[in-house]
Image 1: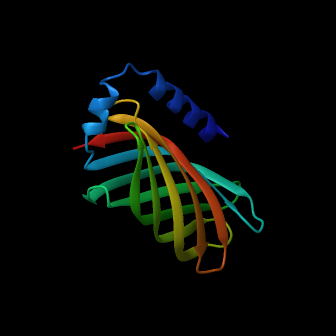
Image 2: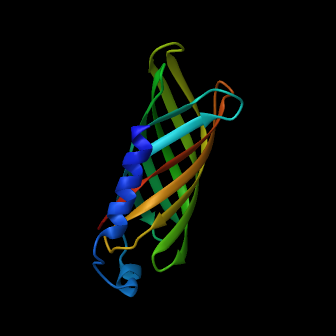
Image 3: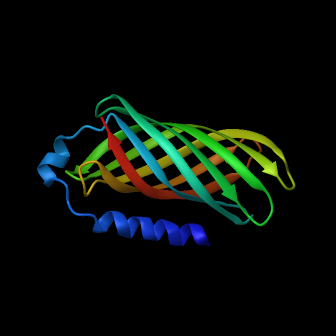
Length: 168
């Protein structure tokens, strides 16, 4: 359970940083590229345990206010197998306030169990709701609940969260 504690510490540290700009300046900044660093958790809807691990994602904005594309990678660890997963999610952004966004997305996911029982690959589809909060001009935090279904028929729910770094 080290990942949830680390995630909580990162969120508190980000919130405690001194403010770099006013909310109006934050709203005017367009982040062409966003780096997401955090933790992920996933559990089966119809049984199975939960797995947790690190997550890294890069998000680009090809069409401002219409399309954001995120590529993410996670290493999910349990007492048994280790699973590496990646996704490519196409998201529609909605601005909630000058410092908050909601993005609704859909995209393919690929996962591979690399150790333990059940080694092998699967693919599927994922739906995400990405909440981004920008209390600072170039940094913030995010929470991303998700639902996925794999080619094997497994359905999972997940939660990813961490810190954001906005780049031009």
